[in-house]
Amino acid sequence: MSSPLFTDVNVASAVTHDRFGDVGTLRLCERPEPPLAKGQVRITVHVAGLNPVDWQIVESESLAAAFGITVPSGFGNDFAGVIVERHPTVTRWRVGDRVFGGARGAAVATSLILNEHHGSLHRTPDRIDDLTAGVLDIAGRTASAVADALEIHSGDTVLVGAAAGGVGSILTQLLVHAGATVIGTGSVSSFEFIRSLGAESVEHGHDLERHVRSITSRPIVAAADLYGTETALTAVSLGVKPDQIVTIEAEHPPTGVHAVNGSDAHPHALERLTDLIIAGHVRVPIAAAYQLDHFAEAVAFQRGRHAHGKVAITMPGCEGSRSAS
Ligand SMILES: NC(=O)c1ccc[n+]([C@@H]2O[C@H](COP(=O)([O-])OP(=O)(O)OC[C@H]3O[C@@H](n4cnc5c(N)ncnc54)[C@H](OP(=O)(O)O)[C@@H]3O)[C@@H](O)[C@H]2O)c1
Image (cartoon, rainbow, N blue to C red; front, side):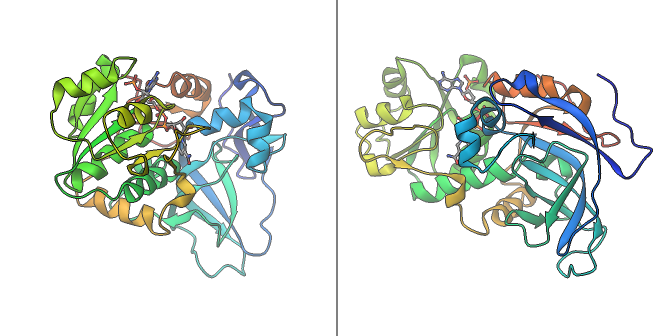
């Protein structure tokens, strides 16, 4: 794949798709940059973060429709970058402001145009780097929403299904910081990583209930299921009240279990999260960072569903590429 051209500031590179069904249709294209309309800002993207929903949208026209996405479309949601131009009517931002947030179906690109009051456009705190800010929007809001919904108290023991993933790695740390003992499910190869988040680790799979019972005799008071329904069903068997169980993925949660979405997050969830990151209470693990012209490898790695933390794409000229571990 050829490298994007950067000699012409009126041209941007963007990952796009013009049909649904297969991530193999994603292409890196060059496109002319339109002039700004009233109220708009132009953002040079430094980092874009991947989430399962990004490739799920490409694979499913009905899911895409639920988000108002039609083809041709850009790709991705999470981003961090800098404001490089503003329409004269814009009052909220100045050129040079560092920003991060979410732009559904648009973020994996060297340049973005958003309204100054876009719902997920935030100032990047000075002490937060772009690699961290650029992967926060969906996983950060979702982890915060789940942590709030669980309403745990210090000393509670909580079961977290898929603790090593993008959402799980942040949620686990939020719960540990709140004083909970967290038992996180994962593959054996994720155990060390889950422990590094402050949790105890237990293998997911059909023997989950037995595994949990073998590592603790304390009552589990709450559970978060971030992958299917296995953790939610196991939590019910372990005696957790269904209204103390949260799922973010199940289409049909077990009876009485709460379905929680990132959109349920507190309006200041990301600000609270960046405060915790700055204070050193939460870190955002980057499983791997890929350069833009290797975006397809990044998508394949995320889609494999065994990343430890977040998967990032860095734009040309931005430091921070790391390979998968
Ligand atoms: N409702 C919402 O608003 C919302 C928001 C964000 C995400 N989601 C959904 O929530 C899910 C998690 O998101 P994410 O960003 O954390 O995804 P992710 O980073 O891709 O999750 C990877 C995690 O899934 C675990 N996993 C893989 N196969 C598993 C299995 N068979 N059983 C149990 N766990 C398994 C992995 O564990 P090991 O590697 O240890 O096996 C790893 O910890 C996705 O389906 C996503 O679409 C929903």
